[in-house]
Image (cartoon, rainbow, N blue to C red):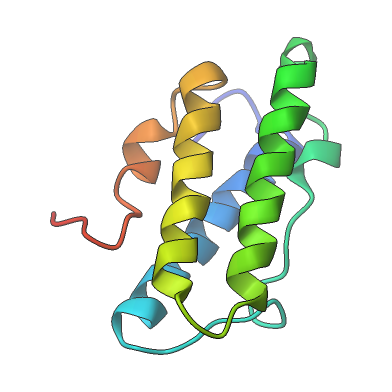
Length: 114
């Protein structure tokens, strides 16, 4: 899929997208999710494809994502709203960094219709 031999951060983010897709399905079926099923992946500490993107803004966005993710996983109610916040954090960051995955990320909201 990536002719440039993906770096650990890219691989981790692909795994997170898979997790989010699975979380989406569970939430749509009325199930709850937790961090035992879906642990937070510290992508911000993995080797990126382009190290010049590791700016203060990147780390600020990563912190916003991590906080939204923790809130989702710690909540027993309103998980759908918290999941939406997680996906919005992804979109917000990827609007500034590495826009390639946006097409896939935009398929992750709960109200996405193919």
